[in-house]
Length: 83
Length: 193
Image (cartoon, rainbow over all chains, first blue to last red; front, side, top):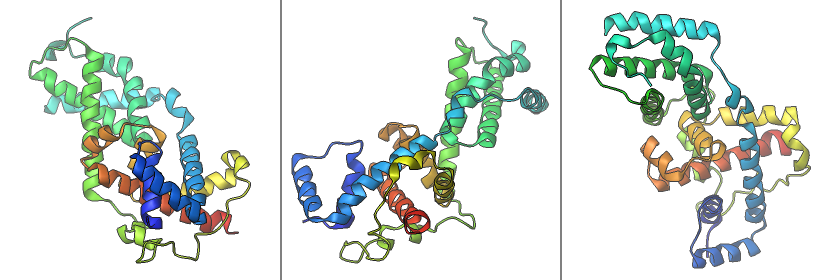
């Protein structure tokens, strides 16, 4: 019989990995009897979704400002002399 | 495509041509604008160094990306090695599973049985997102990096393990601990009240 600690660790891994048939069955048994872990399973999926949603949608269009670029060119040129 | 050697290494041309793409990549993998900018600059310097050594480059862009990727990995490893702690972040003890379970591996009673209701509208709820942000920033830096790579960027597990120099078991433990901690944080600051 899995402990809740073990069951929740397996639930995490289940999001992207596949468990063995035996592990799946034992986890299912645990969930049938444990309301808190069943709730945890839903909650951790929600958490993943919320976190994914956090991934700054600006990332795809992020650019360096012209000033940053000028500054960068200056810094690199300065260090270029030291190399 | 022109070949690069130290003689024709035109810094301004390189920065103006490639910096935005490199920056976007670094930003998506670190979630921090300043870090991303520093990494891009380091990558250009690294490129310059190897051009000075006489390396002949066929594809400038992919060459720059490979240098940037090395710089990123150095950055991850530094985070992992230092396990940097600032005042507001959880200690390793607080991150440990035992903060949530009894010695027998059962849930500790107090904050674990709070139902999550009305979750559909939370994605767009500003107050909720502020709480979630606060909970995320309380995670130690290397946990935050795993959250970014595994959950936000959906990076492959073996790539993360390789880049961060951690074992597969270690990665899953970090994810488990992170989720337990975030859940407890939201229970305390959102769902309980």
